[in-house]
Image (cartoon, rainbow, N blue to C red):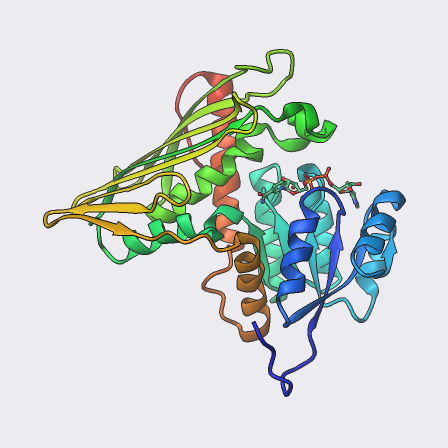
Length: 338
Ligand SMILES: NC(=O)c1ccc[n+]([C@@H]2O[C@H](COP(=O)([O-])OP(=O)(O)OC[C@H]3O[C@@H](n4cnc5c(N)ncnc54)[C@H](O)[C@@H]3O)[C@@H](O)[C@H]2O)c1
């Protein structure tokens, strides 16, 4: 993307939390001329220093509030553990900065609603990194449904099967108290996506979790989640971090609508749309999702076009779904989505 030399100076972006996912956001910032990376804040001096060094010697600090007060910071990408999101996001809002925050927005529905409400009240742009929405496979499915190609969706099946990754994960991810549980931490990607595709209000969730290959860890590494919507549509989500071989990554999408069927397998295989005229192939593309995700947030900040960013309202619904899935697993029965 090229920048018009007459346009306003690039938006200064501070990254809080210089861990694993931050590098993907930094790559996206570097690819968008409408913004520029101005520094890192992390509670770990080692990590903040290493990130600053790695990315062109930008300033770094362990003092989040001092970083937020810098006049060249207009916006923040927050990449800290889930249980810190609510508190840090409210500090970003209090400092008057726009925010792209990693998912889930918070670990409780009340916390997520408080953050969304605060950004709305202050007129600041909040977007939540439900990154799957920005990958072309997800956009292809969304666009086909929105165009009416399959009629009204009545059944969506989404499977995201990943290999066994737990040994590399950090302590906070393995702690349900800090991550919110695996259905909220990772299951939320699927729950948000199917709800975005179906475009209806979720009313109940029935979830089951298994400890397939990590029985010694307090983590459900395999999840089955069934969501019912207010028009009777159903989404069946299957999510695994337990498959072998460990490098496995497999995805499968089926959308059954009143007027057609859409199927989409793994990258490169393309999507198939079946209607009364026969089968048609669609190219889902392979765009880099984190660039599109950042671009949607920058669009909202710089032009007021909020269509593509993930709204606070949607992110609160995603937290409600993830929390409901956790409650359903604990109760062993379907639960309502508040
Ligand atoms: N969208 C995606 O696909 C995706 C993928 C992975 C992780 N995530 C999300 O990104 C976030 C970060 O995950 P990660 O894997 O990068 O974690 P990580 O543990 O690798 O990094 C977190 C960083 O935050 C710092 N930190 C922790 N508490 C802090 C605080 N109070 N103030 C300042 N810094 C603090 C840590 O020192 C660490 O450097 C999580 O919310 C996670 O759910 C999203």
